[in-house]
Length: 174
Image (cartoon, rainbow, N blue to C red; front, side):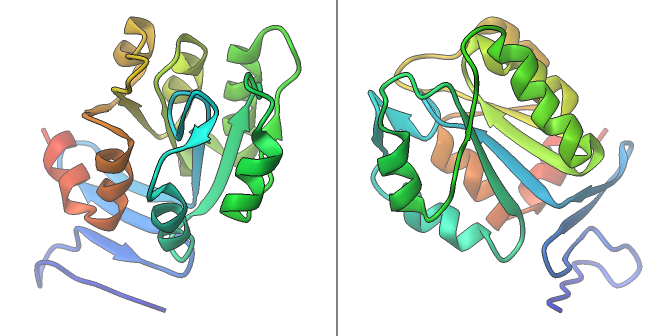
């Protein structure tokens, strides 16, 4: 068990096996066990995994269970799965928005952080305990931006929030 205390009298965050626990002033306790990521436009560009993404996601596996959701627009998910050592949840054509939100609900929404940028990611971010919208070369859909708790400049900054959890606390404290 890796335990990290920031202030002696006030625990702000800890890593507890596969979990990130954050105590956010004005918001309360956030216990994250799962990270659900959209693939196309979020982790990839034009079906190609972004450079450095495999290393970054692999580094988070000691803190969060990683789940990928995709409609496999570019028909390359089998390659991406191999590169990441994961198996994505493939969505059925039609109503991808609700399918993504259902993944979050099945995992236990109160323990899920979700990252996305497309219009079909809005409900997934809204359902999750922590929703992060990222700006990508494809842009970010306004409904998804409005559904998010945090906006990150890019996917690397979003994932680095979990490496530096006090950044999440700083963004969300009231």
